[in-house]
Length: 163
Image (cartoon, rainbow, N blue to C red; front, side, top):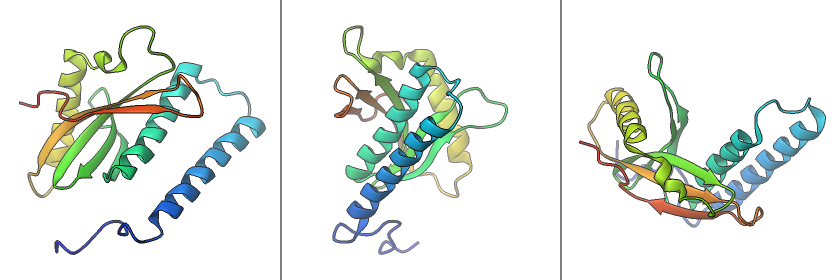
């Protein structure tokens, strides 16, 4: 692939407007589904987590990540990778942790040793599907909804050992 080829429009294009329109459309569809469909049987905690993943996706795009997958799963393996994206030439496997308060312990501490092993194993499955062997890392993004209309993000790059 030529280095001049871009998967997304450059900074002077309509991408920011398209991103805003996409976000508004998703929020509108979520709102309509909530009003028109039967009550969601998914617990509030899981709905909050989904919203956090969605907001983290758009936040990372603003930071320049090129997102290539969401909720990656593999048959025969437990677990999933929330987001996968490129930051320049590095393939990033991203775990999103969402909380409504900081009163307990920091969200990033939920990525314990077992979760790190699971993420590394899932990243290995994804990487084996590629035709090349790029640099890669595992990032963690925390999303806090202490003020629901203004989520707060924190990005921990290279948050897990990947040996």
